Image (tube, rainbow, N blue to C red; front, side, top):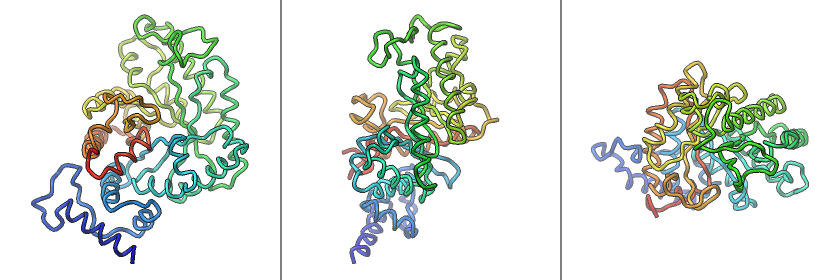
Length: 370
């Protein structure tokens, strides 16, 4: 009886929100994509496991229809330790929520102790989550290779790739990690900066260190060398890298010789352009040079990443970089705008979202902006 009442409530909610049966009331705005009156069996199963409300279900279907575009594109979401802790007793619910939203990939926090099995609970959680994700045809990338100490100690890279290999050798096929999502950010390596490792001999400076062969260029060369090593170490697993939208324009201005999109794609299967902003037009304008440089000879190699975090992991409350304050409807509008522009590029892969905790906050809102 509870299931019957749930789906009746869903249909009534969908009809109320989207004026079922009255085409004149429907809008072309992506926020008002018509939701099917009948759920698929998969949607029913996922919504039960996800414990999604009827409103969350309608929002998820609209979101999924935009990011997947009939299965044409890939889309990923970052999942960090706070989300893992929130779902530590129910990884299946997290998988169901991600699948219901239509994600085809995840970039997942994978602590060393969980990979090595010294944290038995974390190890088991990884196995359960990854097996569940694979059942839903979701690819799982480990979030590794972000430690700035890699710039002064290559051995740390071998440690990290070794942990992934150790984990994969210890689990069943359906529990294996599919690749590594790297986040090497040379532009944060400022002299005296919090993220700058001891022993680093060159530093990023946006005012004085641009120029062919200067320190910014050298740091990007080191970044590419690290990715080259990583690609060889983890093969045949996949490798992607999050890149700043700033690199390619500086290449175009002849202020850098390293850091072009094609150079990153020499060693990475794909790149993720961090185009964080609160306006869709700026997000697109920041991404376009990267797509243009990748060209139409490379198929689906560039993902555009937007930020849905606000006062969650990786965000200190900067409303200029996050879409969260703009609300769910504007998020959908942004997705549609990016896809409308991106689909003319063969290299356009889809959109990624930083990160799940912030996105889930928006998804659970009763109103567009709570």
